[in-house]
Image (cartoon, rainbow, N blue to C red):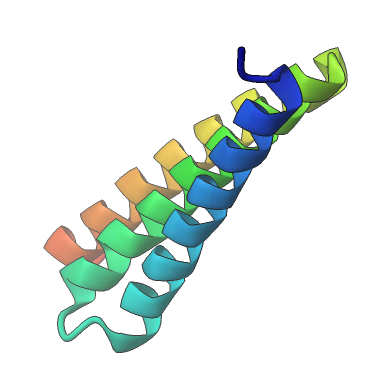
Length: 90
């Protein structure tokens, strides 16, 4: 039987690797849309990391932070996409 701590550790390592790949795409991405997609991926990966850690520590506060980060990441991605498309946010 696999331990719960081992599974969460593996999940955190995989999510951290995905975070590093997204950061690499942010700096190397040839187009602005690659960079926008990587910023969105970074936000989503951070939400996953917070959720996994909150689940392993049984912390409601970290779940609230993950939800707030997901909301801010979503709104930021929408604003950035609108700015790229139309040249203005509002």
